[in-house]
Image 1: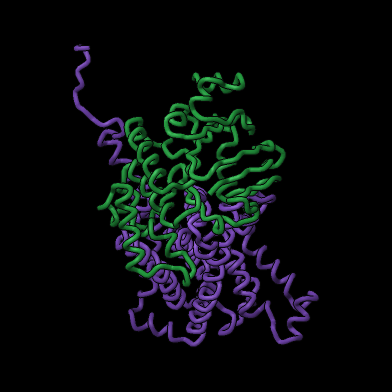
Image 2 (image 1 turned 45 degrees about the vertical axis):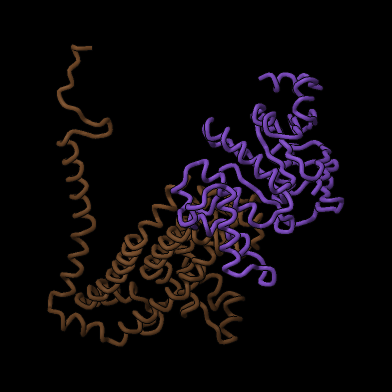
Length: 288
Length: 239
């Protein structure tokens, strides 16, 4: 084998420098065009006429009401969806029953249905023209063109996030640890709190953050059910569109910056937590 | 505690995992359920532990019907195939889990729990690993921790699913003796599942050879070796 003299030794999974750098460069270029540049453009547009002007646009009562409504809707729909998502993932991964595949498909439904269609669906069901909607309005609890409808539509759209995040993780972890807890005398509830929940907490956190980001940003479905009543049923994304259509571009982009900032804060929070608990994370993942 | 299995059968959908089987396990015996995969041995073990319920038949513990007892009520120390240690807890917390899960009335106080965990760590000859996480242990250490965790609840019996399956040959030999010693000190009725006939022969007082959801033969290791009852047993033992 003396005729084969390796000129340069290189691990099997490594590419030449040229390939490495051009791939990395390409990736960064795409990220810049699609992600960083638009984000900077939003902030830049918001601050075009200075900080004072931008902040003043947020002082507008309609803008304030929109921010408040978005936070309220997220505060209701995200915890509920987290609870439902955990319950669905738990039922799907820890038990065997008929129709399981069907339910998994059903969980994905909100991803495949256009948000506008979802919104119309709620209008048809709960609108004043339907029997149920008429009764609700008569009893002083309007759903459509009111906050409950916005919450419902948001929950429908964001339902898959937590469950989708949890199901693969829980499938991979299997049922053995839960079974072990049961044989040691723990109740089902205790098993869930002390074994299942700690094992899925990172996936859960990630799912909740995604769910939250989407809940605050949802436009289509909310646009249909809310009726876009200024100062009452207008969420931040709807408000952004209104401002924009009224040529109040600083107000529109300032509101958009706030929405983007909320998303960035959640992402930063997640990274900080991952960094803080890196040891535990590694310990949970390496064990097989 | 003696275990009586009366005409137990188990079907998953339309496939029968266990045809009616009956078996009597005297108190304090170390029993091997021996058979190839798919022979129903793990299903039988899980039925004893209360993790599966039989389609028909009864299980008696010390003469009392235990068929309807929940997994918690059985108080069976169960060692799982891949040990199923709680990965987010230290070894100490793993072993203490069963004691802490007890209702307040029967739950030992903190210092008492610590004392018992220390004693169990001594019993498995790993006194200094209480603060470690399962991911920091070797396969053999994990198996012994799983054993200690199962023993912590003061079980009425010990059930082990392929306890040596995931270990290399040298460690396996060593731990066999470990299990034998623990069985002899505690005097617990112990049932373990294995597909390794040599392991069953060396370790068990009583061997139950299973195939296709049926019990082929029950006997002491010497008997089974000397007088295999069916062609399957003869072939399986000589393999």
